[in-house]
Image (cartoon, rainbow, N blue to C red; front, side, top):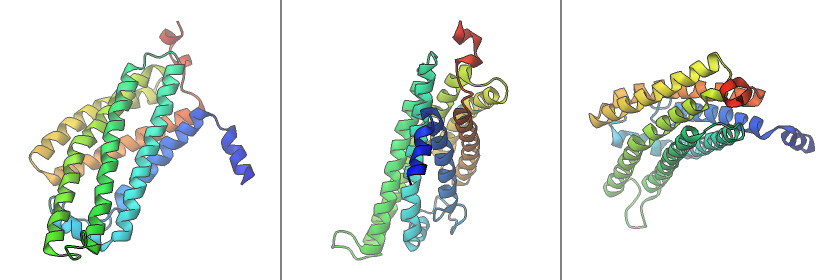
Length: 250
């Protein structure tokens, strides 16, 4: 145990921030794949709220697990991005875009964490009843559960684009201190994709095309994960900094 703590203490803050980005991103991906009603476990149409509620309640343990770890993964990613912002500030970069993006992504993440809490309470209500008045899985409880799940969907419609737009702002703000070549190209791609993704997401959500929602979510998640892995690796290796940009050094 002491050796593990010594190794942790020997890592720099930037390296720990890199680990947070990579670890949080991987956990978020796994959770997204195994959540009940999602991609791998009893996949259900997102427009079928009653069906999704039933699937989540029938897989209560997995629902609780994925909700808790989804929240933890999101918070871990934000913690890593805060280290990135501090790095930008320490390197003398005008980090307005990075700070603004971090605030936007943090607000969206907080809303998504709230949505995970709604899922937790929804499953408890369905399986255990509501307030000692309505029995488990009664018609009244199922109506309340469907309403709760629809509220979570509404939160996601607002919060997910905020997260992507925040990532877009962070990535464009960091470009000057990223290594030239692939890292800067990836940051530019993320900044453009984030804006396009948010616009498409809002359009798709407004016409309730939930199949399109699944598709655009999948594309956005893959791109975001790749970028987090690259940014995390850059933080770990120590190749991020003002030495990458002569205009910052001047």
